[in-house]
Amino acid sequence: MAGTLYLCATPIGNLEDMTLRAIRVLREVDMIAAEDTRNSIKLLNHFEIKTTMTSYHEFNKIEKGHYLVEQLTQGRNIALITDAGTPGISDPGEELVRMALDAGITVTSLPGACAAVTALILSGKPTRRFCFEAFLPTDKKERRRVLEELKTETRTTVLYEAPHRLVRTLTELLEELGDRELTIVRELTKKHETIFRTTIAEALGYYAQQEPKGECVLVLAGVDEGLLQEQEQENWKAMPLGEHMEHYLSQGMTQKDAMKAVAADRGVSKREIYAQLLDDKEK
Ligand code: SAM
Image (cartoon, rainbow, N blue to C red; front, side, top):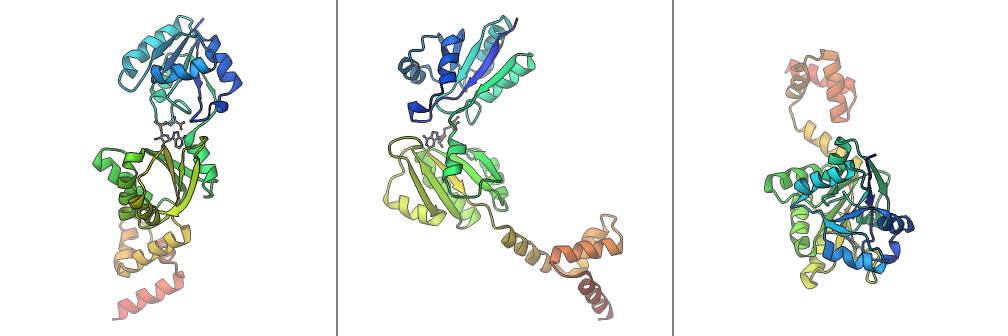
């Protein structure tokens, strides 16, 4: 019988966040695949876990992934842990899960700490709808695309960032999105955990005096939906009415439906559009 792949969350700073189930499973499995074995040995020693470890990281994830899936197929139980937090969230776990599922292996998760969700709930920003952008892409074109999308994102957005890149990212966010409310959550679960409720511009002013230190999560307010709608209506209103109608007529809409769509875009009544079209015709 094939073994099971256990995705084990580990603490993001405070060792007391290790779950009882994670300790038991890490002791019981045949092998632990760890992102950085030198880092994880401290955790394993602390909890007196003596299971054999093997490395599984960004640079060996394909080759090692095949090896781990083979071991699972032969009946070994394997636990995956990453440097901190939940495997698969901004670390190489995702790939191994896909490979294991493709091979018909049972995969299960042992939930625990995750910096994104912990920061979100501490941010004071709306939590009902949110999006997670992880680290902004390093590729320039891709990064621009994501920033472009964030301009109209109405949900709270959670971003990861390393301290040495924080100022650059804040500068780009300010340039692309304008000033927005932002919560910077630092050193989660650790002694110096801080929740800095600020704006992008204010944070940049702060970090001009103070070097960013410690791991952090950025929780960015979404754009106000009313404001976004107003902006969109202004954009449509800047377009000549005839051109706006043509936009829908060229898609095969009837005159009546096009008028309805134009009225909705401009935030006015259909009657108003009709009157204006008549007016334009008479001129
Ligand atoms: N898998 C992890 C998780 O579940 O949160 C995330 C791994 S990702 C490589 C590391 C990033 O998570 C850091 O750059 C930082 O943005 C965030 N992070 C991790 N631990 C944190 C902590 N204690 N406080 C604040 N942010 C943290």
